Length: 640
Ligand code: C2E
Ligand code: CA
Ligand code: CA
Image (cartoon, rainbow, N blue to C red; front, side):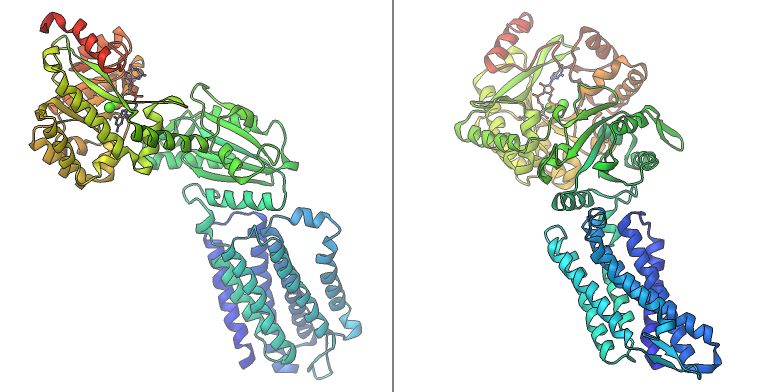
């Protein structure tokens, strides 16, 4: 009985593993199916071994057929485990199709066929075991042969891992190797001391190890959709590159996804993403793999031989119907990019550039694109911009333009927004919408922000803007600046240097800044507000537009985002705008409408109750001298 205690432990462990496997969602792909087969075979072998040993120890109490049955079942299941494990390794490198189709398949299949043949002919040969008349069990010489076959598979496994070591991440490789070693040592022990039955227990421990490392579902799944995640896409693609497997990825990106997420919230959009995932899963194609890359971005992948021309259009068609959850339906459109690997992308880096292709905002509706039609995120461009910014900081190439802001009540231009401009000697003009986010990431924005602020101060101190009707200049603060503890101090110091009264500056801050470092921002704003500086909440209507920001922080102005203004043509959007303006007025906020491009918009907004208007209809952002000329012309009636 003592000898089967290892088996009993193994049995409990394997049941726990099976429960865990089924309890956690698993995707029925080849890897998981192979692992599950491994679990079931280990389960069966343990069960038969326990029955067999128990029967043997009680001898004649059990009928002969029972002895025979448990012994045969045990040998068959036990000897199937090493080849299944080796197959599992092959599956991990995604080379199983290639392997099984070639002549090499013999090296995997022949030994196990011979083993099975030997087991099947045992009744006639007694080569492996036999029972005597008293139902006592006797080993035959064939058991050593079966051990040798098992060793063969384990060595096969080691060689295979070695051959593909570049494409199996090191922690997983270690788990695979340790399986081999953990299985070999007890096998050797058992080879010499057959009564010590520890190899099944060792195999079970190995399976546990693999379950915790390679099969770890948290690592490869996106829980919101139940699809594979981005990192597992990268792993799989790298494996395919390493094994020279041709495949096609159709990268699907939902148009305006982040906008929808802001409007409807993360929970709703996650439910929608899940709905899309289901629709993609229902495409009747057996060997597909679907990944959720995040933020409304899916990758649909098939091996080259399963790919057909119509597939991208079938996927695109899915978006002709609304997606929905419970009480909400949403008409979405998507841009799809078809990438054939290795034809279109010969490296993982290039592949990822295509996968993360930039959505073309000029193309409306559902679109199928091919790699030559998409613009990839140009990493070179980012590097070039970083260099251009640093060059501009060194050589003082940044300029500040001013966009006049019209006061509806006074009928004059009463302020202006300072907007930074960069004209690189090589790259030409670079939009702040492009370089500001890049410099937010590397911290250069803080220096840029100070350069702009200094230029604005210098401009105000040199010109008598007040006499031209300008009460103050609005300056944008970046998120990174707002996170600086000494922001208030720096700003006040600069203004003191130019001997400017604090009321001639208005600082524009977006909600995002409040989201990142609420305490620092609140502290900075408090100190600046005490000194008399006023604040505008920028880009209102693009973020989460949480009220707390407006209520808790000392904002005096709210700038309605140009996106809101642009959507006023829509009747419902107009209703929403009306009540937004009414609400802001009740909160005693002064309202600035941005991005006013037409006279109709200007009239509507004024009627609605917006205090100030800014946009191309009035003037584009213009350089200092032009701005002065503009004021001289437009404001002169009142102020000359
Ligand atoms: P923003 O603060 O929302 O600035 C308004 C943007 O809208 C400016 O783009 C302006 O040129 C543009 N705009 C003004 N009127 C209209 C219109 O009628 N129609 C349209 N379509 N656009 C209009 P710009 O100058 O390219 O700046 C883009 C963004 O870059 C700014 O958005 C701001 O977030 C950032 N930025 C610009 N200068 C600075 C700066 O000195 N510091 C910081 N931190 N950010 C800046
Ligand atoms: Ca602004
Ligand atoms: Ca704005």
